Length: 289
Image (cartoon, rainbow, N blue to C red; front, side):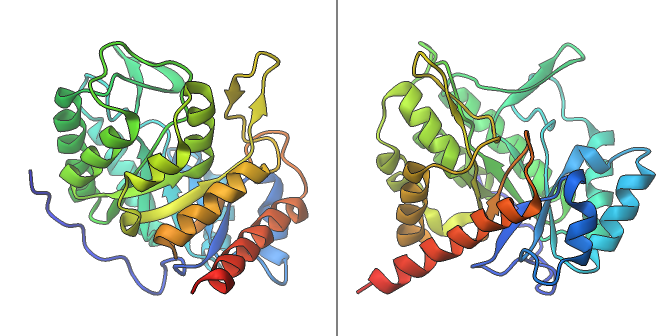
């Protein structure tokens, strides 16, 4: 399968390859517009700015004049059995044009069926048939949007007896066949590795990190029974920072995004996590032969 490449991103609006951004959340709208030294770029949750959303769009227009903006969706339903929602893709394309987004990302998952959205990112078995299905649809989305498209790996809590390959192989093969990019969530790799008992460094080694469009970093919560839930409401743990350093050594530079979606702290706390990402990048550079 050969995918038609997307047009290159506008260099003026693309995040720097070593840039560190933060997820745009309403609690930080005003401060991000006024702060003297802000993040290198912002990532928006696509669905928050679709449809009749005049107030969010006013804030977004103000911030887009200052920061490069990228889009991250949660309802593409790539692995759902129903046809992709063309009206939704129209809206995403218009929003991406409005902010001159360098790229758009979504998840390698399904989110609904039979006309019902589950408002969650749901896994599937990792099978040969689903590689072809997902890659064909991802390649179409990239062509449809007319810009770079990237797929994010999930945090997962179950495995399937029907799987015929591991998650990293499935992820790599879909992205390779689609001709799109990796939106690599390092925290999700760690969460899934702890929940399912695989080597997170082996997962990174299975991917072509030169094709990473962006990396996500976030916090998580460990349950009393040891299960880790991807809550995005905590600081990033030391093990995830170590895995990020390993990814940076293997494939950096790539834009890095700090996600914080619940129990949202003051912007200064999120910016401190962004500063730590830059510290990790510098430490890897200093240690390089």
